[in-house]
Length: 115
Length: 115
DNA sequence: CTCGGATCTGGAGCGCGCTCCAGGTCAAGA
DNA sequence: TCTTGACCTGGAGCGCGCTCCAGATCCGAG
Figure (tube, rainbow over the protein chains, first blue to last red):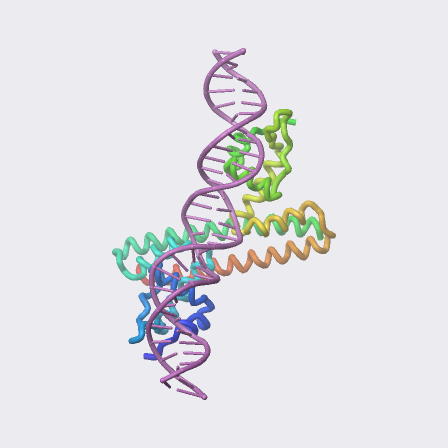
């Protein structure tokens, strides 16, 4: 299987090498397999996971939230717990969207006022 | 004009006394008028401003962003600059909403998968 | 007038999410 | 073989947004 060096993985994901190592330390990705010499070798699957993590980070979830999410996706819990957890997360995201809409409304009012 | 003590203002706004003072130091609100003895006296208008700040903080804007916003609302810039700034901010918020939707989509897929 | 709770100030401390650094190892090219 | 650059580890440092603290002041109740 073809793998990526840390630099290539950073390039592909848009996440810095340091951050990739940080995510691995925190257990959000990996553990990443190593070469005989100890260098990290990122598989396509690892890259995919980084994408997932990035997606949720951009949505504003914290590292602690993501740890929980990762635990769920790794099937360390019964299915009903997973669904409950995921729904709960979804509700939290909906509230964030609502907060954003409130702020946008204020902005729109000001824009209308100054236009 | 009836005013509120720091404790009452904190209670009304849901923002801690320390944070109210912090926002004032940063210039996001106030300056808050003082009593003869030096105690802060929050007016209804101050409370309103705190609400605005809170609204944008909840939407994920940083203190620095808010400083710019406050400068705009205080009419320290020509109208066209204000509108441009506000539209720019709105676009940034839209991107946040999009990021949230991307994350929610992932969540929905997982929920569907586990259901 | 006294007491105690609320408030004042300046500054230190903290949790988060990286980011950077020192000192050492590995590996491909000249 | 030697050089050079990518990578390794553990740990320090940093910017943000509060949050807390010490020591002093204010002021209403008794």
